[in-house]
Length: 152
Image (tube, rainbow, N blue to C red; front, side, top):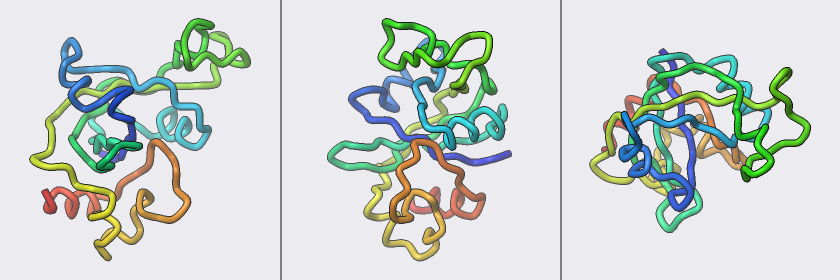
């Protein structure tokens, strides 16, 4: 099993939105970064655990946990000219963009803020706290995962 952190702006799609979806599942569409796409396409597997992270908000941080319940599939939003994630260069016969489906597991008891995470020397190698890392999806090591959960 692998561990991940996936970012979403809460005004676009929040942990509460995921919890309110039918069967508490949703596809993770709209990723338009090749490195993040490759992780979803090649590395994410059913059962992998995900920290749900709220970004670009008053208190950015980890707010919940989700689980990968469906592995990589073409991101159909890339083919829809009426969708905000439309990519005219992608086509269904040879898709450029992929997505996974995640299921709500639980909200954390509190938001573990980015500021708090940056202060922990045990997390110095966590991609999220490294300078210049702006990926919306990133791997989390088992020890990092366990340490973060202890902060809760």
